[in-house]
Length: 362
Image (cartoon, rainbow, N blue to C red; front, side, top):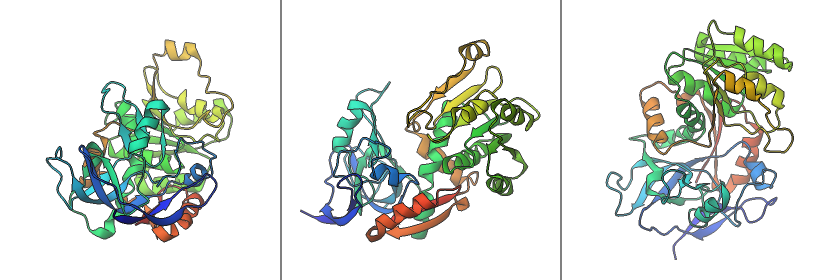
């Protein structure tokens, strides 16, 4: 049996253990990738200590996707070649229901009984020298320099809001409001909306320094709004930030945020507008969002609950990067090796702001 180095989570609340583990074995419909760089989520510490109550069957090699080079391919791969630089998508879908597949996030969590069944096979993630993925979860990047692999890990963050905007059918020239714009995923949503052609992006938040930085990075198409916490006042401030109606509201607020703040943003959308919910309201208990039925019905509001993104999103987002519409250079990267995986997790938690990226280089 061949072995590799991996960081293993053996029990919730205990540190990762870097040790030797069996190399993955290739099966039909699968690809094995040599992991070059993998993103560390800012809340990974809350996953590992059990706070987030993610569905993980321990022990497990964690890590949601990453950047690597193809090591081995199965007979169903006709475009991939050994040595190709690829993005490893952690969103694993069951193959026997195209309409409503079960989903597991490889190396992170699973949704429902079907997702847990998927996790039993595609369980180990990217905090290792190698990982095995479904063939369809490996997307070619084209040629990159090895030192660029860490920055390309930002795809994992950018894909989340991209999936939300695809679900809402965001069109060039529309006005977007990003609820949670001053966070890691929210700032990514600002950059993605602009890359997709949004005329302007309303960016509400309490941190004026971060709001100013968004304007510095992206220019006058970003319309910052300082929140007060008064729901009706904040809603009117968001509406006044732009000359025309808000076509689409994207919410990516974390579980700790008051529902009043989220509702203020959502109800700023125009009649016949679209709302995308990708945040954490209610996940830690407490009150639900409580949007008024008459407002939704009479204003023909479309509400899209979105978890992750469609299967073709990675290749489409890579094309935006290659076209120069989406700049990975916005991200400040801090890299660790596998022997310092626990330090990487702590660093990610302490540096969770906009355009901060913590990676592990196995």
